[in-house]
Image (cartoon, rainbow, N blue to C red; front, top):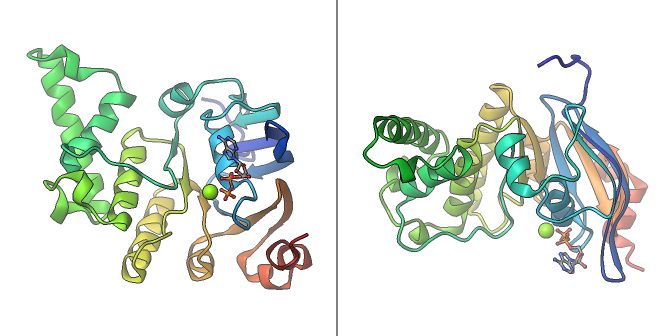
Length: 257
Ligand code: ADP
Ligand code: MG
């Protein structure tokens, strides 16, 4: 692949999305550079999850463009963006299957993303693919602190552990960009520090991250830059340390009206 070193990994251009008459995103434009950890902030209902959903194809965009390393992906369906274009994501409220173990859920993510080795049962290729998926899942579960619960039913995990498993599943597809929707909401403070450390390690290995987050400690520890949404508009793009002095950010959280 020939990409200039200055090309953003993600470019969002004048993106708009409405649900009926509810204009949830209006003229949203921002870039993400390779290696950044961008915090996506904003009050409840400001459009953060919808922005992740439109970028990753889970919701169709009404207008605007989404470019991944210069390639337009705005019209692609979610499975193409996730599997073929390498955008990993997690959801605000992960739900886990009741019967599968943690490692089986992680391995199934590889199945979904890299073809159906499960349907090739008894073939040599299927066994090799399964062994590779198991090795990758084992390593990622270790990286995301889930080794101890590897064989438990996924549904038995705590909310925070389910969020970590969601990150493992996204990473099974070896994404070039990872988008996380509130990875620490409802998570015990002790585990939050572990999530920060795990995400920092991933970033040091080259991963670019966009993280929807409310926890200011988490944001200051982790993010290189913050993009702030207010009622569907981007009102600020600044360093975490500048948030508290930014009038438009304060207005977004306190202003109402
Ligand atoms: P945030 O993640 O910032 O809390 P959301 O993106 O979830 O905000 O929601 C922004 C607005 O879009 C809300 O008014 C919400 O009700 C609306 N919305 C989100 N998804 C849908 C949908 N699938 N159908 C209709 N309205 C939606
Ligand atoms: Mg949300």
